[in-house]
Image (cartoon, rainbow, N blue to C red; front, side, top):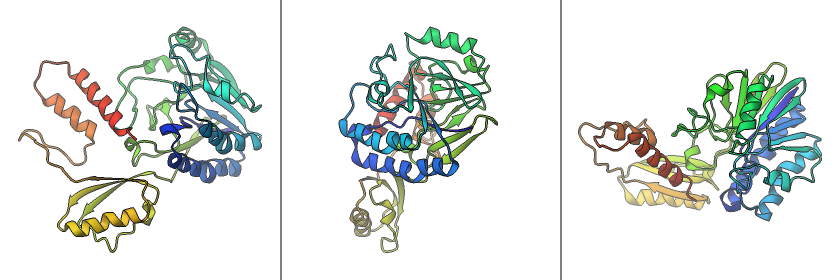
Length: 346
């Protein structure tokens, strides 16, 4: 049996942003469901964070989610297994009040899991592990210890895995708790990463600037061979454009229509030509445009910035090489959190 694994769909993201949902919808209409139809897949496992807002749901966002995701699955007779994630639950110390259970109860094909549960997918028994909190931590860890399942799927916060390409999670559960499993698949972190046993599968589409040029999509899991096949989403929302006295007459701006664009200026000899370049982007209807052209950094002779390094790597290295009495791990954590918040600003 083959099942589609989807995670972190975040329905209603960015205050129910229309342009974001339009971008999401292209994935479902042109990639996700056509692939399921072609491969005759009749089972979906969603590993958490179906909805974005823990406290409320925008009615338009709910209508969009039903029209684009849940109705098409029901119409195809697909069994939909939905594991609750941290964005799906109202309280931080219990999963009992959760948006999937409350909002999707009218779908006969959807099963919502808010406690650790062993589920048969074909002939394979899989342990579903919803978001672990203070109320269910003991039963979750006991179930992990006692289960005979070879595979687990859930919404886990584990140490040592990438939250995104810049940040590695430094707290959470230790991965050694899952050594008994052949495979562990998880949502929660939006970028793909794996240590060979535990795999974060990443969400289907870009949502923030930290996602730029990071592969997105979903996966197909064969429950007999235990093989995992990624199906990539080719559609991008965020784009970096490097301007280096680029000839605006030859520049094709059409591909950036409705995209979020950052123009990084490396060389600008003629300001008027640059203005025409920017005007060309505006003329095709970019969703959002940012210009970065001030690269004046006060560097010491001992500290050099490599263009290949990302922002977090540069900050971490600068902190490591600086001389001060504070705990450097705390300083790094503060800067990582600030950087994440800055990237997620609308």
